[in-house]
Length: 247
Length: 138
Length: 116
Ligand code: SF4
Ligand code: FES
Image 1 (cartoon, rainbow over the protein chains, first blue to last red):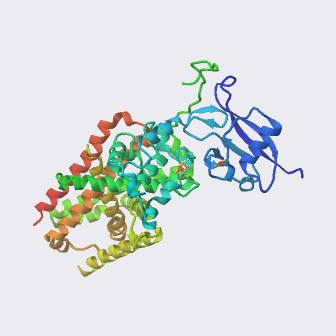
Image 2 (cartoon, protein in one colour; image 1 turned 90 degrees about the horizontal axis):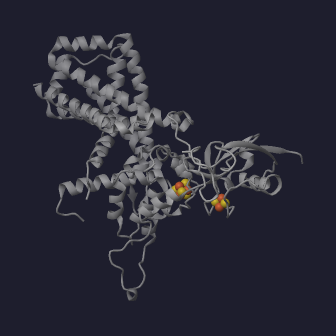
């Protein structure tokens, strides 16, 4: 089968070029191939110097996110057949500094994620003898959606506010904060609310809503942030009306 | 930041792109977002028209007639029609996004988005109906 | 715990957005299009005055003007930030936006108060 498709791939080799440039590759077109398969074909057969990240090939590890024709996508879930007849433009995730070719540096995100304490915070741990923290299916249901995040950062690459405002904590991290806030075992919501009320927190968000559209796991970070704003505003009025009863 | 320091193996030189001032023309969803945000201008415009109308009313029958006369100018009719389109766009986007911010739980389960949206649209219809009714009743 | 009034401004933005979404299209259609084109007869002066003497209508019109103005102030402030990338002018923008909304609110209150 002589059918082929062209991939226009952004190359950036800091020791060679001062800024990224596109390089075209012709790869065989196969109906069951995803963009990641095509990239691996390039790496194995055409140009071993091409750098990109991937691992699971099944939408779980979250490492293969790239811009495909200008939209953030998991390349292991982006079928070539959806981009016929090509060429397909493949670029590193937008708004992140590019290390090389399709590899971006995500340490900014990791730093911000840590700030929101994405773990169960307890004022006091229950003694072991009392057993585990139990949860009803209903309690689980409250935060389950937000716990599906795989840190693929497609939502960051979709968020113009993250691009414009470097201090913005960003969609996934706020959704994860909300994931723990809504967990019946957690007691750290006050802490997180304070962190996210600061500059760079939830109020930077203007509900563009693109993060939710690109999320491969239906986490709905945009919803999480708006719900967080509602909760924070409610708290604000409560503490205004009942300054003594600060819970 | 690029171009200034040379690449060496132990000091990698990352490439950072500045976001263009025209970022909102980059894609249709971004443009739609900016249009949605700009509806606020027309909301403010109508708030001012209402204020103007109230001041005319307070000033007496003649001023009120003057106000109605001014609204009949073709220029204002065109402006008002444009404003109406934007305000409608505001209403629709507002109601469609409402369920994202407002989580309604009934019997332990989250109400689906369409239910919250329908409730909003229903309220919109009722409000508009009541306003027309009050006006008709005189 | 909650420093600053951002949550309040956001609450005003939301309330104003809801008021505008529910009430503005029909009002704008009537006042801006249907009355001028003669599709519907505008209410007479005495009628409206009669309405506006009732506290309920006063409150209604006050809300109808004030909250959407704050909605505009908040939304437009961020449009200026993001659209034009002029965040360094924060103080000026904040004073202009919320200041105008406050001014409009006071004017509305004064006007409604003076009608009896
Ligand atoms: S919220 Fe969705 S898009 Fe964002 S990092 Fe998590 S899984 Fe990826
Ligand atoms: S390779 Fe793991 S998510 Fe795509």
